[in-house]
Length: 146
Ligand code: HEM
Image (tube, rainbow, N blue to C red; front, top):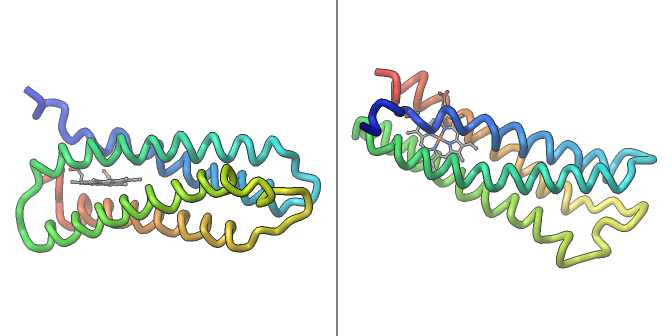
């Protein structure tokens, strides 16, 4: 029955990728662009929050699809890396959401919080790695298509 809905995961992965990348761009723009308003940060944080939820949904659907994947060493290793990058995404963007709540001075006018921007950059790189590993699974190893 459930097999007719599989693969499920590819229907859900684009949301977190887009939300996290655009959210990080809005927050970075809000911090770096002269004259940017609070709204940039507000919008960026909401997009990142929705993307963070999206990572959880993508993870759940990924675990469902994983049960159908062939059990070869290459597939296993790539899925393990893919899961690890997914967990790292949750930690990095979770921290990016929590930090401004804990430290209210982080975003005060005129500040350039480079360590916070470095965290966002790390998150963006992780999104790219996560997507690339997913692509390896599908287009190189044939998971979900062969
Ligand atoms: C527990 C976490 C995860 C598992 C077990 C997992 C598993 C998989 C599997 C088995 C595939 C192969 C296609 C399929 O059969 O569905 C795949 C592809 C993919 N995954 Fe994940 N995934 C996880 C998390 C994520 C997250 C968090 C993202 C993005 C933020 C993501 C992005 C992708 C992408 C872009 C593809 C390629 C889809 C395509 O081109 O059709 N995955 N993943």
